[in-house]
Image (cartoon, rainbow, N blue to C red; front, side):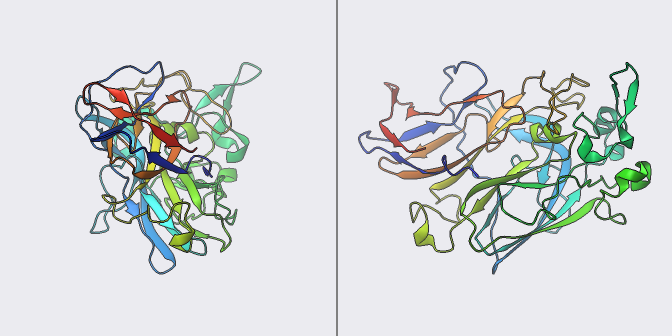
Amino acid sequence: MIDRISRPFRAAAALVGSVAAVLSVHGQTPTVVPAPTDQLREPAQVLPGPRIIDQQLDAVFGTAKVATPTGPVSIQVRAYAPPSADGNPRANPSIPGPTFVFKPGDLLRIRFNNRLNAAANAALNAADGTTLKVGGASGGFDDISSHVSHEISIPNNSNITNLHVHGLHVDPKQDNVTLLILPEDFSPGNMANNLQRFVPNINKWWNRNYQYKIPRDHIPGTYWYHAHKHGSTSTQVENGMAGTLVMRPVRDEDDIVPGLWSDDAKRTHDRVLMVQELTNFRIPGSGGKNGSKSGGGGGGGGAASTPSSFVTVNGQSQPTLNLAPGQIERWRLIMAGGNHTAAGSFWVGSFSAPRKDMPQSLQA
């Protein structure tokens, strides 16, 4: 839960005229950039029905466009995508994944499908073998395909995944990070027998219906979801597999600052700011290093030695947010980078000459 950094932000009325918050995150010393023209946009939202949130979510590989101050840049990523209006899978992912909005006592149902099909994509097929070998202590090699999933954290099987709701107090049988949700084109018969028991649906191995019953006394706040398969967590999170969970209070008047939230993203002053380090890890021809050195423990399987290709806020590089003097803002800030190599900084001020900082009251 990120409760400390989801409190209100007030733009002081002392500054006359338009105000821009330049939302930039740098891995090095911040540099002066031209005035951005790309306006900050909210991630797509999944709003609740009558006490039930029911949504299909697919893990897909495809092209995502990152808006930058110099124009859009296309990158290839593994990430999440809601279905299209006709219910069919989307060809390209969204960065970040959609924001799920719900309240204490609700039922959050996510119908999850793993569509990271290497056989149908030359880049994924070349980047990820079904079995990786690593040097053992004796100098030999250890075939990790015969290991139990939660016993290993070495990089393996980057297209096998699962889903973790970070911070929610829910049934651990639903939020089980040892599960293996396989791609559609990867049969459980390709796995060792002692791993097949971690596949939740042996007849529909690419699918898992997650159902989270939110306790009625759960604390509202800002949470997030992400991939958590041991051996590929960092690989997938660095590649964009993350999204936000917003738990609203049961009564709007019980919010930290009532009146800021709106279901209309163009009218809201209660915003999600998801910061991601997008590395095109082990995907040839997409700007990353194919077969780059991998590392990272704790179930990571990441690329600790490879710098991020992009650091984004809501899938954008250095977007602009126009603020009215005196406006109260709530920013739900989530650092969703896999390796946390970027140092976060926000500059709030005016680009009109003379360029100057904006007086502000910031509670964090």
